[in-house]
Image 1 (cartoon, rainbow over the protein chains, first blue to last red):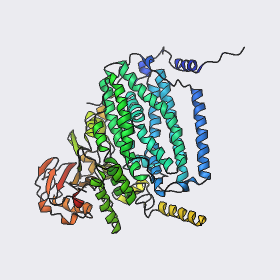
Image 2 (tube, each protein chain N blue to C red; image 1 turned 90 degrees about the vertical axis):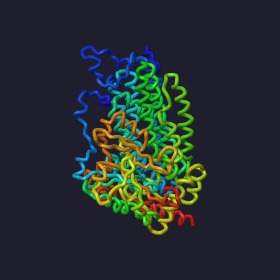
Image 3 (cartoon, each protein chain N blue to C red; image 1 turned 180 degrees about the horizontal axis):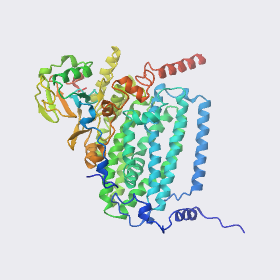
Image 4 (cartoon, chains in turn green, purple; image 1 turned 180 degrees about the vertical axis):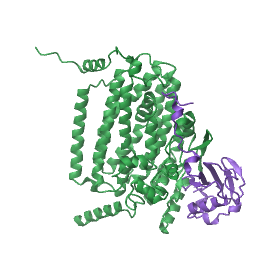
Length: 504
Length: 121
């Protein structure tokens, strides 16, 4: 007689039960030293619901299948010289931003979930976190593998791990994850699991993956889909952790609200880079940043927080400020890239006339009034042979680490300055959101490694721009500067010319 | 301490990474030209405390020189703000004597110059 086969649910129960034994010769608090100090109160860990109930054997099976499909597409893309079929050479800069700014954070997420998977004492939570940890490791690997094909032809991708630790704008995503990973396990879960994966993830993945599809980059679309199929599990974990914390004890509410406020704002600042990518870097546009924000945050996020109101959780503080800024941040951030691409590892460029008209149509309230004149001035300077680059080092926000470029809520002609003095030293912030975060934990943020300040302190390879770029491993005249005149452009033009000569 | 830390002696291990003592005798000063926000942000510059205030104008011209408004700046008419307070700096005196400290923010307005075509750019 053959043994009766267990159902998936039974197998999951055996799996988690077997991970959930009562310790006999060590106290549970000694085994799980990290899950109480944040002040979160858990009465009953078995209240954790994991709707996926995935066991390791089925996890491996699903993931192996996804990998097989993904690598088949990547191989076909390479064999067909798919890199020559994207919309324009400018598009490749999207991948440079993704590889240097996002992929290393997949790795950071892997490390963070490995930590929470070890240190939260509920067995269901641990299993879910461990699987997400493995997912994130898979994501960073598939992204590196996919984009490595472009690295054979285009510049600016080869030194991404070192650049992640050194280059000024990459400290924005790096500091976000450093901040989350140096918090306790519950704050990490709210930061990355809820605020990032649940509330904001669509604003990251939909623009990148639809952008890739619109621009003929099927390899990126495929790793995007491959990752996105894990995201439904991650989103479930993210929402589950919020509900679990709020259901367990009323004292958890103010702590969770503070984290939601903080990580919403940090996430919003980080996504400003995506905003610039969407509105300026895609040769074929998907939708504007403002449209994406309205769909994925104002509508979807609004419904989510309405749903969470029964736990007493409110919309994140400054959500209204973020929505108002939706009219501005992509233009402001592209201005940053345009004038600082001589010290960046990717190219920026002047939008053409058709592109400017698209921006006018998408931003009827703001573009022509505030930003078109800026581009006209720069275009004029380009024409006179004086392409404008910012000739100084920017003041950075001591929280988000972006240059202090954002404007006052309600007045887009005036830079927003906020500051705090802590133990006799002054710290500057780009917004009330960033100032609040610093003021909440100044002892943490006074330790920030601010790239510009570190250059001035003499810790970045030297005192001159060429020395710093050498330390950044940016190949001057190749990786940096305007797209026009770059080796990338020359290569793209050669491919285009070849296509025309073959066709004729 | 406001950080909720697992280690009770957290404060003993804080590495303050932006103190004046780390700037090799200089202090970091930020300068911002109001109504010209096509320039990405204020710029930072490390200066010896004895630097005369007037040097700020020269340094600023090195950063802002290419702007169409730059040649028309009349420094005697500029209006100043140092760390959120209106100020009337003495160009001949040092930055410290003018009330500037480490990481002070110096903002200035140039009457009549409101950016490219008056758009604050």
